[in-house]
Each structure stands twice: as C-alpha cells, then as structure tokens.
Image 1 (cartoon, rainbow, N blue to C red):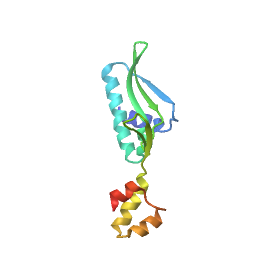
Image 2 (tube, rainbow, N blue to C red; image 1 turned 30 degrees about the horizontal axis):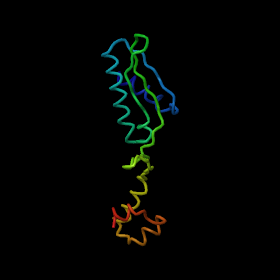
Image 3 (spheres, rainbow, N blue to C red; image 1 turned 135 degrees about the vertical axis):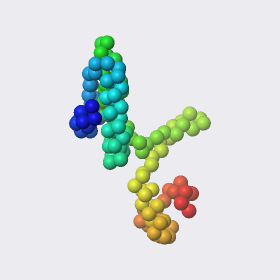
Image 4 (spheres, rainbow, N blue to C red; image 1 turned 180 degrees about the horizontal axis):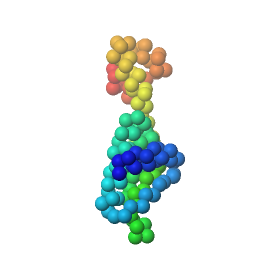
Length: 132
C-alpha cells in the first residue's frame, strides 16, 4: 500500500483548490490503512511545503453504501485568523513567519533596534513588545 500511496500522493499535490479525489476501498480496514498512508505522506510533505500540506484534507466517507477515502484541497491560510472582541466584533490578525525569522536572525547577529527598524521598514507595536 505504501508505494501506491506515494504515487497517488504525487497526484494529490497537483490538485487545485476545490478539487478532490475519491478512492474506492473494499472494507473499513482498507479504508483506515489508505487514509493512514495518505496522512503519513502528508506529514512528510509538510516539511517541504507546510502551507500546501495544510490545505490537503483526508477523510473516510460512505457514499451510496460504498466506502471511500476522499482527499480534497481546500483554501486555508494558516497565516490569517480572526479575533472576536468582547463586543462581538471581529478583527483580522495575520502573521508573517518570514518576517519573524528575519528579525530573529538580525537580533542574533547583534543588530541594533534602529538597524532592524530600517531593514524591516519599521516594527509593529507587538514586535517591539516581543523583541525589545
């Protein structure tokens, strides 16, 4: 099953957002094995492209009394979330892992706050609280 899941996972990586593949299986045991094999491939892929991997959803489904493993790519941005305030209003929060990495490296290289602000075109209030 492992070689089959590797070959199919290379096709799964090519899915566009909104597309899905359905894999017909003969029984529950095979369904669980295939889903687990795809999850293992997804875990390996996440070390190369974590954003793309986070958009791949693997499910075990029953359709017309037949068992399937479905793999779908859905839009998901792990860098965006929404904060609900006490009054019920939502505000958008974003993170930028590359920016955090750059600031961390500059701090490691003993750059001054002014040098970092110049290089990053300024710092947010949250970055100032976190790093200085």
